[in-house]
Amino acid sequence: MRNPHSRQILAPAINVQPLESRPPAWVAALIPDPGDSDGINVTARGNLLRARTQLRNARSRDADTLSASVQDAYVSLAGQIADAGLYPVRIWNFVPGIGDRFGELDRYMAFNRGRFEALAKIQAPSLATSSAVGVDSNDLTIEMLGAAEAGTQVENPRQISSWMYSTCYGPRPPCFARATVATLDGMRWLLIGGTASIVGEDSCHKGNVVAQLDETFANLCAVIESVTPRRADPLSLLDDVRVYISRADDAGEIAEGVYRRIGSDRAIEMALATVCRPELLVEIEGRVCLTPQRA
Image (cartoon, rainbow, N blue to C red; front, side, top):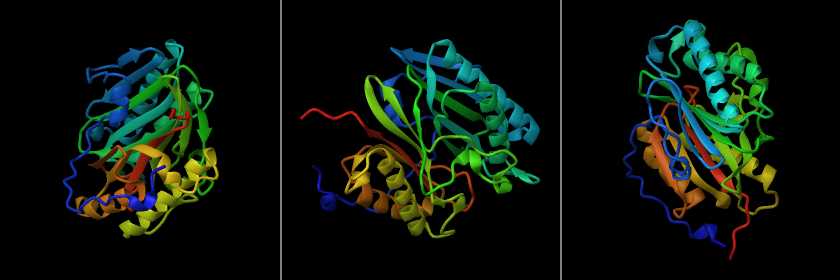
């Protein structure tokens, strides 16, 4: 077993690039990229499927038009997965200008309104886990990963479930599971969605990136422990990590904290991307293998 106290620390000098509208590298290793042609783009391998679409010039759409477009896109993507006899288990959303305002709403709230209405129509057996971050683009990209078995929702005991958020965060709540237990290529995984410094439904430690990172790790531990209890170091199980960093100046401090807590022997990606609330400075997703490994 890896000694958590022997973890190396990444030097603070790190060049983090803006996020491309793509899922983490482990997804491409599992199944090829579907591409960015207009309409729904799909790739399949075995009993897995990636369905992807882009809403062109989404940044110029008003709130009502954006919500309606997101609703249609979600229904169409889910339909592609259902037509293949599969179930959505993981979703990535890349939203341009995620915090831009439309009067009382911001673009994330308008996005959530469309997503909520779509999921009410789709009525899947379980909510998939999800990430939604802001990207430097004019297009809004949505990608769903489908698998042969419906995933099992996992919630965080430190947080209110997303669909129960108050209207402080928009007229419709952001509907997603905190994590999903899913079978991919015959192996069981805990797929953890974008996790930030939120307790209950409230953002914590405004302006303090170190404290936000600590709170984020506490939330990641809580999600992992809900599925794999009695672990001395839950973060030692976390792999295929992606870190979204809102401010370039925080990259070194965040990198040092991530590598110190997770270790240097794990797959870790870091990119500049705006977190869904302006006060949140860092968000982390990843996955945990739940299938026992052979010696």
